[in-house]
Image 1 (cartoon, rainbow, N blue to C red):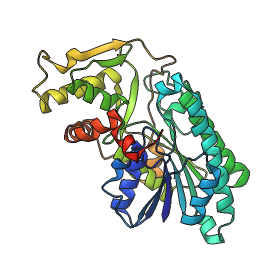
Image 2 (image 1 turned 45 degrees about the vertical axis):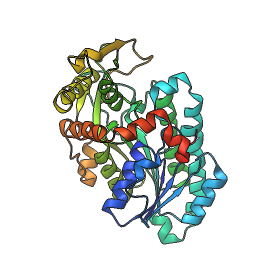
Image 3 (image 1 turned 90 degrees about the vertical axis):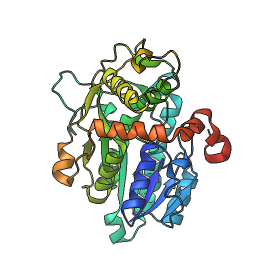
Image 4 (image 1 turned 180 degrees about the vertical axis):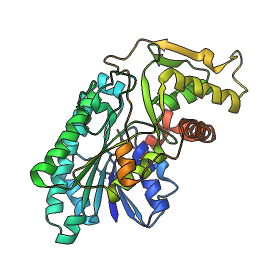
Length: 353
């Protein structure tokens, strides 16, 4: 296949592209606007491949999206481009409405026109895979409940509401126009190349620098953690083997409270970086509880039995093995982290706001 990946310079998108180039014979076209969280350095190990191409395009720009489809003639679309940080959505929801809703609409209309013009066999095999989040479901009541593909939507933040809107648009284009779509909803991702505003990389880097480790409220919020490379494998399974019109939930089977995650990171750093900054006895001493986020969901947890049953996917990493790989990666790639945090990769022209 030739697969067009939107948002391919982002955290999950770059993992998907690295997986495809390194483990399949497929070609990839990376379409990315390169906002603050898009970093082409995350693709350095595969960017020289003859099966990789990059287009710096905003998904809201219909003319440019049409051009990319026309010139590259993809067999499938993996739509990952999205604004994804909850705190940013609370402070400024407009970008989330524009990218996640208007951008998805623009992609759907461009792809619908492109798909309808394909010859019969290519049209039948074409797929539009929309990658979403478990946050569209809201939060869970009891400790035993899990999100299934039938769980009603109840988004809590501007971010999750915008993603829920995009999910509904994708399903409507399937029902109304017959567009062969696939939808996946995933739990919290973590792993290498994660932008440092997110919980796990933020805690790792702040601890190494002796800065406070901010935890919302008591840190009792429960999340199901999914190693990003496991997620990339799942997404490829869906786009290549999934049934059009179906939804697949993807989870890591790793439910932990945020405070537990922070403590596990501190424990790993005690082992891997025992020499701390002067005056710091234990990394846990840096934990600081801050006012809770408005509308903060308490618990997310995914039932991923459908994708295992129908497509044969299960996560390869436990949280312990994945977290160790993640911490070790950040320790070995401090220069990448520094450039991302001070914006040097943007000034080099690798990203534009």
